[in-house]
Length: 102
Image (cartoon, rainbow, N blue to C red):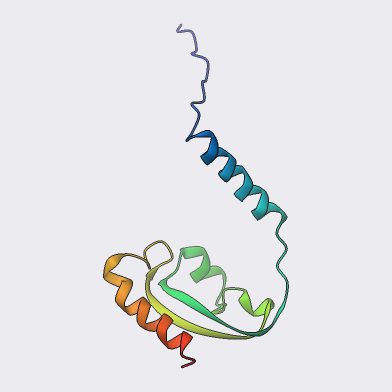
């Protein structure tokens, strides 16, 4: 029978990166969303994970609980791919229209 090797956790990143990660995790844990009495625009990725598609038909993705008005604009791709270079121009056009109040 082989002896088990002790688990050694290699440090990830520099001390500064680890401190930033800890600060980010703390901020996520402690943040409490507040209501907004205006209009927001939700850029909704066309490709949603299965749990969003099947568990909810909430097109506002929950943002309507926090904002008085929610406008939803569909964009190509998934949450993880909307910033890829092939999608940059269409995304920029949607953002430009939002900023111009269209």
